[in-house]
Image 1 (tube, helix red, strand yellow):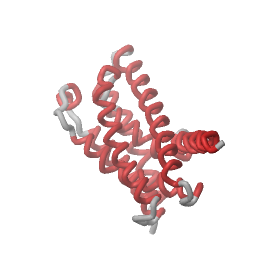
Image 2 (image 1 turned 30 degrees about the vertical axis):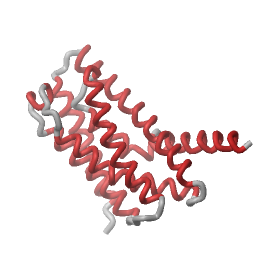
Image 3 (image 1 turned 120 degrees about the vertical axis):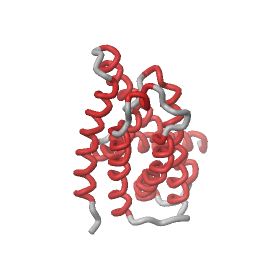
Image 4 (image 1 turned 135 degrees about the vertical axis):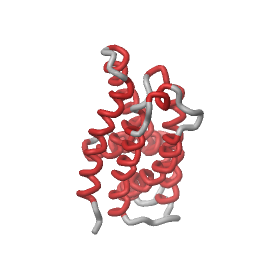
Length: 200
């Protein structure tokens, strides 16, 4: 019976994690993941895995320590900082040159963006998580919630890579042009979010 209850709890929190990303209210997180992945194509999947892993490490750390009550942050400021992470990532994309995209360095700046900005996004996940259930049975629920977030993020990555494949590799749009146009649209959306969420 306990095993069955544990599986039910896992499924519940896994689903909550996926729903936390795959909703219109999570558009900020979707835009951030999209901006991270825009410079990559389907044959760059190994680099994308490293990138998503860096983001995972970042948000897992703050999701855990915030949910466990070790740190406390203002929700309004976190919600304001998230679109700023999108702005920074989009600007970084816009500043890339052809050689940066086609022949990136072994540790491009975007990896550090993913790790550091993941810390900020993790605080937002923690706010939602704690509001759902408090702290009873927190660790296994936290694990399931985090896995749900990762599954949803990987789905977003798959969609972005598929769309990039269609436009760049099938329709033969210039790779840099594609990245800059989409990044510019994301930048405008993120600036609007930041303006609307400014805490003061």
